[in-house]
Amino acid sequence: MSSVPSFDCGRAATLDERAICASPTLMDLDNILNVGFQQVVQNSGQQTAQIVARRHLDNRRQCRANEACIEKVQRVAIKRLIALGAKVSLPPNASAQTAAAKEPEVPKPPQVVYFKQDEANYVLDSIRQFATESPSELTVDFVINFDRLRQASTGVWSDRKAQQFEAVLTEIDAMPALAERISSARASFAWEQTERQARAIATLDEKLSALKTWVLNNAISEYAPDIAQFLKRGEEVLSRDNYEEILLTTERADQFLVLIAPKEPAQTAAVETQAAAAALAEDTVNNPEIRVTFAFLEA
Image 1 (cartoon, rainbow, N blue to C red):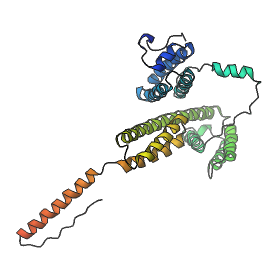
Image 2 (cartoon, one colour; image 1 turned 180 degrees about the horizontal axis):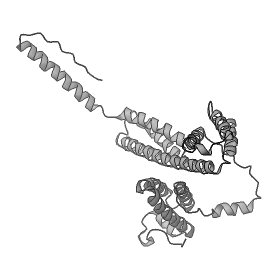
Image 3 (cartoon, rainbow, N blue to C red; image 1 turned 45 degrees about the vertical axis):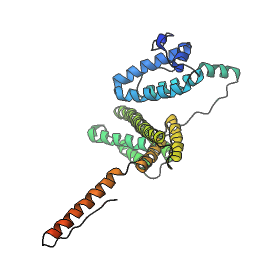
Image 4 (cartoon, helix red, strand yellow; image 1 turned 60 degrees about the horizontal axis):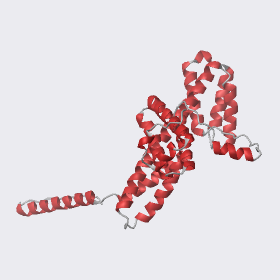
């Protein structure tokens, strides 16, 4: 990457843009971001890429002229683009390398990442489909191991069950044709998870923006302080990119949106229903017949 950003430094208007133009490191990262963005546009479409780009620009603007903050935001955005399939690499953090050189390296224990139950079920379904499509490939060992996989995936999920599932999967993975199917299933699951999380982030971002607009226009409302506190926590959840947290926060956002929704349409419907009932009553007085009217009013 050349030390020239993706935008014209002669037209840099904001503090973050000027800081990027003044730093070769930030310019290189900006270039990587631009390349990754274009790749995601080609592979996944403009909408998916814009989700990452919009979050990145919002966070970068908040850094103002703080170079360390901008670099951190750029690196987070690049990781998101890589997760969406961008074929770019993240350069080493210069400041982190300097700090590591000053301190003796302490070996860290390897991080163990076990299967989650959703992924295990996804892989199991793929193996089941393989068995249906390719009966000639099956053996007695396959049937036995498949039953062990099924048992390992049932009940309450735990690290122990995940270890059992992975151990059996290693044995059943020995079949070349099935190994390719399992590898493809895991890649597909990871892709679907990334896409689903990107959509969840966009949905929560939209709901938080609606709540923020309401708070700014209704600062004296009794609900405004609670919603303002919720908005602060919501931004923190978005920065962590934890899918479960995002879903829970979205549910809470929906509750606030229902709470502040305007009540005029319901009140108008009630008035119209009452007017219709009054008209029927007047018609009954003018016409010599018996009428029974049932009015259903929805609060």
